[in-house]
Image (cartoon, rainbow, N blue to C red):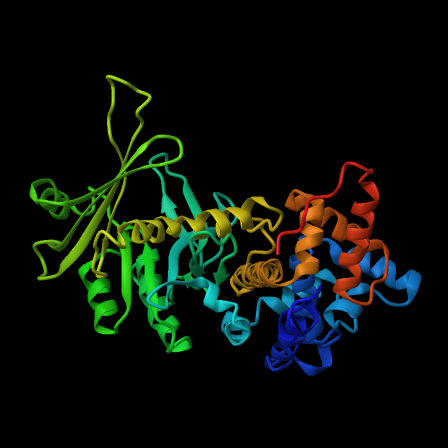
Length: 443
């Protein structure tokens, strides 16, 4: 009922714990009450259990039982106070957490789970997108991005460009180490998503040199400079393009002779694919790219039939009648990083946009990374661990699963994550009456 040896909860947490022990502690020796390891792992545990106030409950449990679940599950020896947690996290460089993303990714690869994310020609779809993880018109620091408004007000924010491996038909995604959209000291021009994306792409190439990648991104990435960089380094791309950003391309599509494939979906809608290879991208470069379009026609609107253009994409991959449907599916899976990642982190209990602390250090970014690492482990367990999947299936909505998990975590000592999951399963199965069986677990 368990996942493979190195992909279950305990070894995943042990890997993180081992990495954290290698982070240099720059605090003055005489002022250290809590180890850096205990502080980081306690912060991570709060994000993992989706409860920023967990430390208070665990202090109470420790007084009653002389131990707590931070010790049994997260290798914490001494539960830190909240002030110590915030003061220490602000001084840790986020870059120290980069190796753990590669470690988890490598374990999926070695255990053959990564193969299920192959898209075409043994290549992987990597979606890039930017998102705020903090925004306010009042709270701000020297590192905040600033967006002035016509009424004179300013929105302050912190933002990242996030990369994630996605696959049509697979709900789980595999996030990589993000790149912060971050103003540098002495910089006269404010940093932006595209510049952060330009920094992130070579980092991904360096971290995963043997991974054949097809980059998915929005229209702002479909520039001559980025496309040349990708093709020169043997990377592929599928970029969404919009009329406002690519007028020349859109004009060329209007006058060109396009290939066409038409099908009918289950609802009776006409699905129309159009494509062309070797079309001019713009006037400022000699780049020729391949373009594809998707239209949907609703036959129920008789006499008022009008094709709705769903999207336009460019790619360096050759397009033909055999692969056009698959390529469009791949292109549209770019939205997974918004729907399955950012939307989940903002609205499904992770509270990504919560102000966990805001200063001139690295506190905000480090909390975002803790949230992302928690999400990564949850994705691994949902994808590989049958016991975890069974508990999730029985609970139904995700928030109910975490409510049960937090209840057990706060009030009972458990020796393993599997024991906690089994308690959830036993409780949920007790609620089902004869003739009203629990849902069948999908393998």
